[in-house]
Length: 407
Image 1 (cartoon, rainbow, N blue to C red):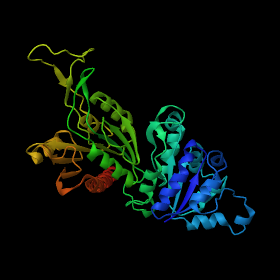
Image 2: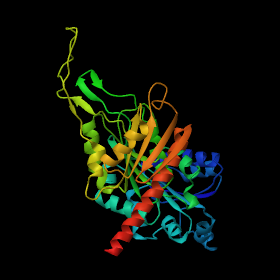
Image 3: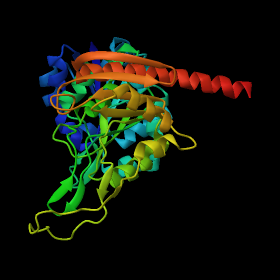
Image 4: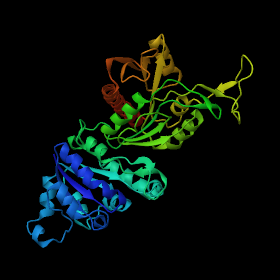
């Protein structure tokens, strides 16, 4: 695959030599195009050494442009990847500007365009940046990340560029950006995953066996299919899924608040988290000391995240999960109907089943249909689940359009 790698002026540009190596390791041929600002963070000499190609940066390079080199580059590319992508380059791309070689090339190419944003968390959250993101997604630009994490400015939040290996895995993986066949391109998938922890006192809590592996695999699979993925995650011991914007929470109430804070952006909501149904009515300020032979803790119901989102007037396409120890089909269909879900993914759990395993077996139900999947790696199952969800999401939208037209 021929990759034009555009590098812009963000501190994350220091990671680009590693990104070039990762792309080359996966068989890509890489031509680098730098902006003037990028040269303040990483040198053309270093990049030429790792890429094995002369670096392009000047639209007014008389020698190169004598043969309309920017058009040749545009035609050569199977993919144009901009990493890091600053707020400035996103604004220029959204506005259709052609003020330098990189933006001119982006307008002149018919190859898919992917960007890996990198900026301060406040900049990323700015309404103008998010509007530009929406505009680019609507035009089919693949947005890779950003991640939630520590930033060069000393703050922590969403805006950190994906790691080079993760970017290379996405663009050179089984669901290529260049394939043009992404089922969720331009859509936003809001997800929950992992367990919640409901504190009893400063050292104890109520939780469950969920590892988050299935939810994280679905988040990664949705990102592979072109979706912007916003993941609300409980505490887990596994790496953040590639391509997802992750917001970490602890309790059911925090997960409820975070889910509702982002639901207006969502086309699809997947509730894969194992949320504690009950929580202590009161958290003790200090550690409870061992004294009596028995102890009672009053529990109260946790907020129902899934039902509350499915019940919204303008609810996204909503997918629930049902982990059961018996009567799986009966309980799953009951939950589907009771909570007015679009789909539900059900599986049998218990000792050596489902929890913390790298494999799973699931059955999926919807109004008038069902499908079973045999035991497989959770990463493979996740891809199958996402494809089925995407198909039914499109079908639901088609039916809604027909109803609107008839009215």
